[in-house]
Length: 302
Image 1 (cartoon, rainbow, N blue to C red):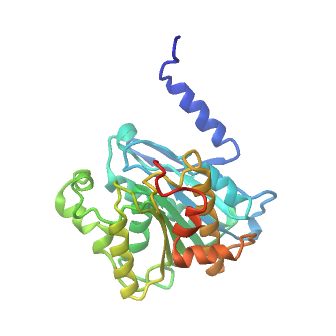
Image 2 (cartoon, one colour; image 1 turned 90 degrees about the vertical axis):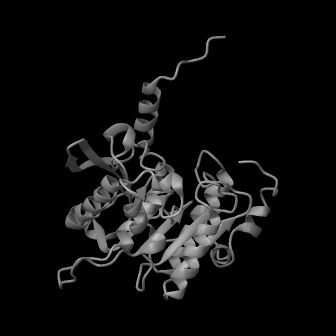
């Protein structure tokens, strides 16, 4: 039997299919090439509606481009009357860059959507960042980095962060530290070292069996964040590993994550409309372990 070769055109066709319902915009030209934002608009969206915006940063650790990772989530939340944006940033395989360049790209993208909020039909005061792994790190950088100077013209703060399998510590993980130009920079940019008061509300969704971005690091981060008076919720998943939330990995985990996100955003009055059951509020408050066990045995291998 002849097996098909690893044809990159297959991946291109798949990405094109996943993004067919989006509108693609150039948001930045870099020395290494252009960067695009793939925007999923709600049905019959009009610019005067001022919808909340969700910006999705894909996972990985700034190695490979994967803007379609969150395409299913974008389509779902667009159906809930959000404008959703799947972001491209520079990555090592395509641009020969690392996390520093990706951080710069995120700032440029947020500036671009704020400057064009009227054309996009979004509320600049209701921007929600969603990220997985290294993408969660980028979202945290955008939220936690102090502005150099606050002026009357300063933009409103980010409304919320949704963080899946988040990387919160680049100071002590050697595998992550080596991706930075030097150790000192990796430590100074570690979200665990940037905790302060008055940060945006955050929801973490994390597998207890995650061996890449340890659950224990998120527990410590949450504890210190709450000690500073910040609103941080954690939904943890028993026996779930790093990729548990992806649509093509576990439909049950994917759905549980969607409902927990909806409940969290509803609690912040950021959901335009919602059909979420009230019991998902308990998932956000208590953790997803009990609800998850109804569907998956503790011995499930991911």
